[in-house]
Image 1 (cartoon, rainbow, N blue to C red):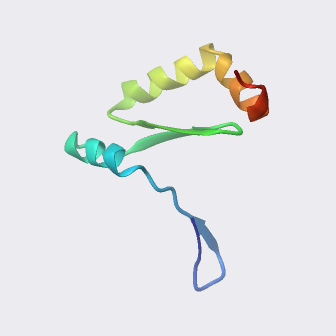
Image 2: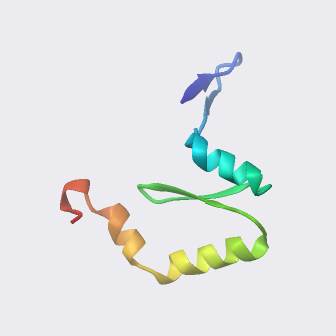
Length: 76
């Protein structure tokens, strides 16, 4: 969703599915890690280890880059 602020600046909001958001709240998780490269994914950020592990996984697995690089019609 796009919101235009009084000074003309544009702000974009990300809306989470209700069940996912409620699950995060029930686990006292207040931050997400958002990764994007022609696609967008969000993961709970429980601690510094979760962020480091996610970054290592994304860097090691080139399938994510191929997935986001291909047009949707080419993905099996």
